[in-house]
Length: 274
Image (cartoon, rainbow, N blue to C red; front, top):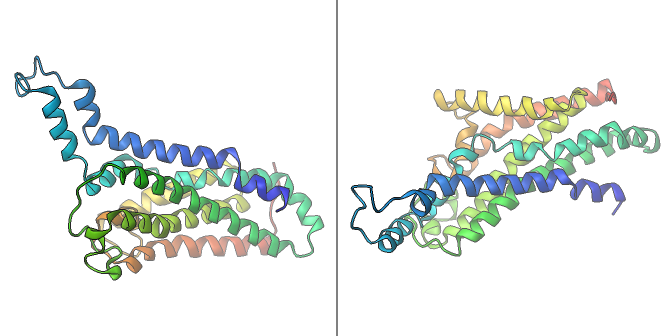
């Protein structure tokens, strides 16, 4: 493996992205589930509903009530869903750095620079996908150690695997969700970030423009129930009536726009300004 690939697959942006996503998932679940309240704020001496109650028994009951798969993911995504693409865009900052320095030299040395540039962009898009997938898989793997309850059905995602798949294998359901739709979200937004980087020398736009697309277009699709752009349904794949294939449809527009931007940039010529 070339030395440059080591930097691509192992740099601070990747670790910051994955650590931040996992931390946000945990914090969102910890506070939204009420676990923080019952562990640190509940006052069994002054609160009328708790006076005279056995603290250990009440705490055991409340903790048991939140130890369900559906609550685990929905509470973890309460705040996370608003920032999800950001964690796939952070690794693209390394591509921004590479564009400013290494790619300028590659333009001279590589016999087929266009093919090399496309393969580089694809690598970063895959990295972005993994930066979403790995924290989710880790989060669900930890949850699998203590979660006890789950519903018979959680929606139509992965329905092609059978109606009883989720009730029998909730952990595998969420791993599949992480490796399919969440990987794809990361891949597409990573690709979008690379395309924007090739169009502008302002690195902060790599983060801002895709996030604006996600929040504005996603909320429009959610408000008016437009399945072609309703990317929010893809993000909450654990609680949707859409099927597996239908959840990938909102990703087609940003994917196509990113590819067209890449083609336009290659024909026009990549700007290497600092």
